[in-house]
Length: 209
Image (cartoon, rainbow, N blue to C red; front, side, top):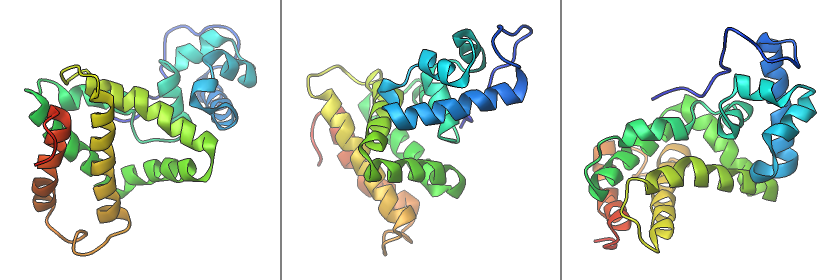
């Protein structure tokens, strides 16, 4: 699993800031404030640059795009948009996509270090509409859109991906965060085996069972 996009270094540096770690931190701080005030869709790279007092080219110099900057601002351990292509590479059909997604999401919530930032983002989504919009927009572009690329197109594909994600994350939350028994102590392979038919049904369009 890869780590979050870190500020990129180059031989040259566009004008408009002092460069180095201080400039990257300045941009991240401005981005965090802009995302909090404007939401994910409302914040722009140009607006973040303006808030940071740097040239927009400098923001692009350190971060590949808004997704990468959001990951840094929210202190997420990695960018799902970067990791998912590797996770799903070569998946042979909806069933294998389902199997890989279940294990991928479980691996995030199983590990306390990767779980904590995503849990913080989830909590912010339940406490404010801005937080909900940030999470909604980010997962739609960084997660759901990437999964859709590996599944046959269909009018209800978006709904089925949403249902699958809600199912997997719901089980993961109950197991690793709320720790409801006997789910919390059940062998992970057993839990996955019981969840898999439903998730395969969502991704194939056949329905659970």
